[in-house]
Image 1: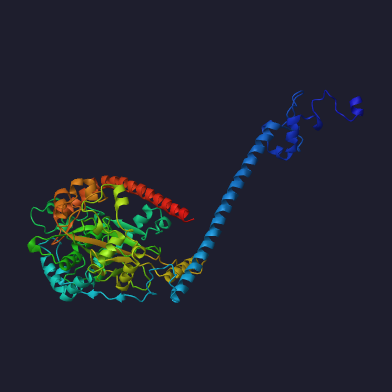
Image 2 (image 1 turned 30 degrees about the vertical axis):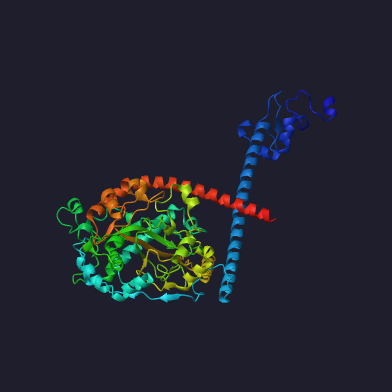
Length: 603
């Protein structure tokens, strides 16, 4: 047989030689190691004339090239997935590595800053450090007042029920305190809040801090950055959790709205936020009851702002007289939490966003500490004593473009506000008027404050936030590193100092005119130019009354205000803020073009 003698197979034999496989077979042979994974149902010996596309595997069976290609594709896909995962892992590891390098660099920078401060080097970036600057009155002590028993046992915050408390506080606020406030524009007082009120405020502050952190996307996004000096700032805290105040008008008399519509409760267990829930049978304060019965809602902000001794003392310092039908109202309130961010606003007075009353309207700011605030570590508050009446005060107002310099009827629109506002900006006194800024620093006072202390300062007193001392931040970062590395059993507590600021004004305060973001005016433009009394009595409690006492009608109206109006107002405010940002961006571009042109002309 010629075919046998030549060592070849019969051409008519069904089984082809390996050399007889076609192109697809050659492709399959190159990947014969994957052939064993082909579909077992396809294995076997092809019939005569049907060997195209088949190959002999290592097990002696025939495999089809399309099966091998399918397996090859699956393996290639798996390798691609592995490559992508490995790539992502390398990106994450590289990011973590560079982040560690950044933290090391930051620690080194902080160390350099501390050395500069110790050596008295004026080039330190921490331009507002506390412990390194001996100027001013650092560590001033507050006046101490023993809360009168009439206030502790006060049944409610209604005018008839709190009259004895008001009279007792009028005696407690001594002539020395009154003279200090009039002369210096500021006093700090300890002892105005009961243990129960402090415990409730602490709980509410913690809860609000948690809510705001989640709303901003977690602690890293919420952390203060350049241009944002606080971890969180929440305006209108007193409007949180409305509808929990049925008991507040207990004793309101026949015909009071809440007395008629609410099931009045006097049991402290059922109504833990009742003002006198921490009073025992003998009328004494039981300090252990405060934490146990503290309200777990965020209504404590409202209770402190409207129904504590704080507004009663504020009215005394302002010289209000109920016989003249004077009233005291909350013009604005805000909860603030200062973290380790270095940026702070320089010496300033509050603009219309934080004090929405015409410049002709007086006011007093009650600044309540929710944490201990010793001056050394920072994160606290500084005031420029006497700056409200200093001869050079208008130089400061003009330099920053405060509301003292605004047009009487306000600005026409966002563009007018951005382009026509005078001065260099609310926070920029240091660069706008260095000499005036130095006068502020020389008259600086930083109190040594305990939780619950209250700073009362005049509306036009210049003030600023104090950043944390760089050494404190440095040690905090080292402790955080130690915890990450397993050297610390517990993570260090966050550098966070909480405070609650209430801006009070008489009922005769005039609501701002012109373009802005004031909620009462966004809801009803006719409220602009009216008094706070008129607005609150006719259009809802936008500015709740706190002295000579609360109004049951207004307390009830807060719930309706929040439920039916706040969402609408918030949308309108967003539209105005969007317009404001657009014009601010245009202004920055114009300034950049001017600087570029000036630079080119010099060349």
